[in-house]
Length: 255
Image 1 (cartoon, rainbow, N blue to C red):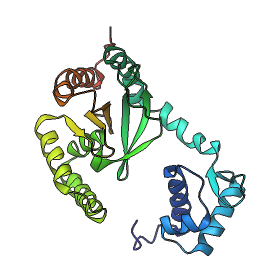
Image 2: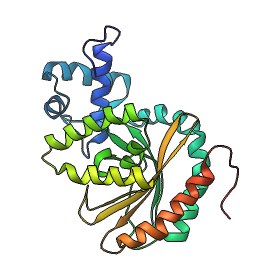
Image 3: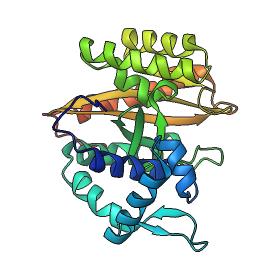
Image 4: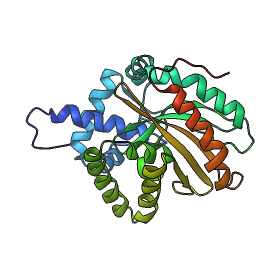
């Protein structure tokens, strides 16, 4: 966030930073951990966690030394989900693709440097990758993220890729993996990754755009069971057909 923006209310931004921090954590966090993750003084974090507790957005865990989100946060998200026409159109296709392939199918949207899964239909295959609605993956290592980055207007894409490459460098990762996947997606419209964010897991995705909305249809796969050829043929075709049908102005439903 820009510190030069005089309209920005720092305390509000810091409060949301703590909520985002807790949403990404897999366990309750103490003030010290939060302080490190959001780069704020412990005293500031202590006041903010107290305020968020009083407002009902976080609560103390049973240990009384850590904090976790409360269900009240869902009240902010449900109206967004309900109002997303792209999500409404995509739902039956997610189910149809999952039934046809046996794989998990998701609809993701961009959330800063992350892709967030708005809807997940779990696959029935024994080795189908399990993802959770509301889960997030970094744009640079996920098929859904790369698909969305590739479809952005050029100016916005340049700005975002600069940030992503800086993040990749900070993590000590190989930038060629992201660069190659992005270049291929720009040429083919299909994002394919294998063993990037987690060994043994890959994904294939295509972007969806319409009425100001940007999302990605994604199929995560177990790379030990699903080969790259199948990802680029059968699975890619299923996603492309669904993406074409979901486009605004098309009222068709899967048979």
